[in-house]
Length: 332
Image (cartoon, rainbow, N blue to C red; front, side, top):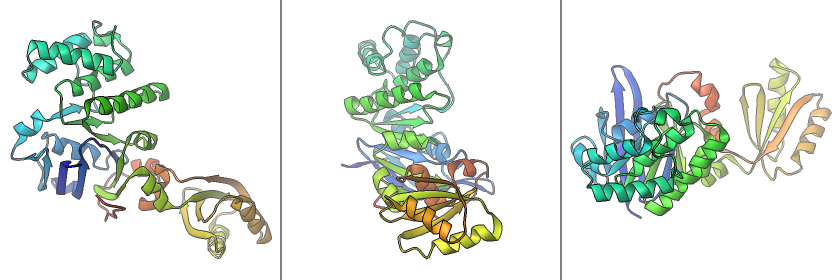
């Protein structure tokens, strides 16, 4: 597979503030590639540079071989965009919005009509196309925006937080429709999201971005395997010195491969974790510690973010942004 997105040392600064800091990655033809990170990490700024809406401060990016800064008109001919903020005209019908968008790209009437039928069917919008968008539910309006992103037969579709504000059912419906669209259209999809489950379900590869840097990049499976095979989250009754003592003591167990502390919990990376919960409870009892909560689970992408940044996405969203050295897992 050839690369349709190529990014090298891409950087964007606003005065003294660095929003995107020397990032590198490629996206292969036909992939669904995800940018995952907290709000303010640099995801949307990256997409704005790739879609020619922002000029990079330094570095380079190419879409389908065209430089985003020097050949912006050619780049725009090859991409579709679904913005985070709603951009359709609520006083027009869904069909009128799609038709207007296609006209702006110079599509002929016959081509517009043919493609409109395809995307209405693809996003399950038949029967709703002649209703003004302002009357439709938010999820349906969003699906029309996604449909618009596929109208011009792009090589790459950029989806910026496509399901923000959705309930879980609407989110799952749109995920399935995006997957179907990729399979039927053969397009490359670049997705930005702070929903961990969205990236896990949709993406072939995921870049974890934090404080303007890519800190990890690989398939969801490989990223989770980098964390470990099993995780045990523990809370103990005591804080302060007793909590610190528990952490130091538990490190002595040969099946505990890594110990991390976050919020009120202690996270153990356990080798062959099955049955280790009982072992840990016995260990705590033997050393005079009281466990108030314990949970065993396989690693998730949320655990991946914690592993590489030292905090959860929710905690990161409360901190603002900055700069952090990156670490890459796997091949880019």
